[in-house]
Figure 1: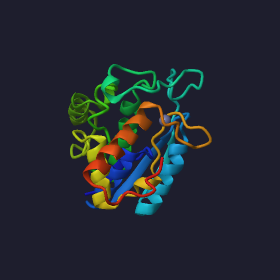
Figure 2 (figure 1 turned 90 degrees about the vertical axis):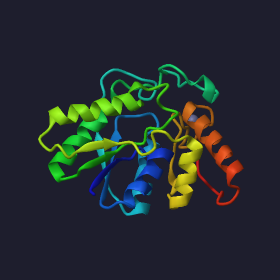
Figure 3 (figure 1 turned 120 degrees about the vertical axis):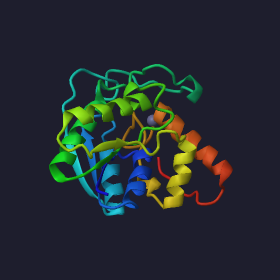
Figure 4 (figure 1 turned 60 degrees about the vertical axis):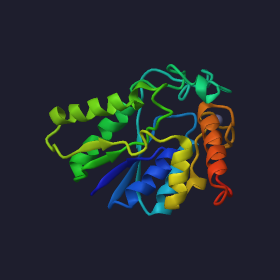
Length: 220
Ligand SMILES: [Zn+2]
């Protein structure tokens, strides 16, 4: 099975890349869309190198603005996970549609049949392009959009919490310590307060509570 992994450099895609690597040939795609947290692209490179996965960084211009691309827009901070509802300022217009469309073109051009994206259970309440319904509809679209009907999008983490993703990553020896999740880093250091930082921290706390071994230097 030849798989394309959308590798942001965050925790989820890091674990997903390790899952994909167990299944066969993998290539990782990351996107440089002038994100304020573009240190994640450095993390993506380190993860791909660690897993010996071929890696491409694709430049992409996204129209409009988002708190992830415009430093004048504040990133929402200090929200407990149960209050992460509705579409936040960190939503990037149609980002996953753009990413997946590029990946589909890459897949059809170079003979890949599977595309993996690391959406998980925390994303669906905030980002419409992370919902199970979106991915089902996207796969339906592919049946009409392209010549190669074998290509489809897969979401192996879609029902997993951050804790469960971390435990799966530890099980697979994924290079979690190389991943970087923060939306609003300063000098490449995590802010500790954005949604991504809050969910990552909570995930490690919950995972640690259920499995007290294997936890050292798990990054930012
Ligand atoms: Zn942060």
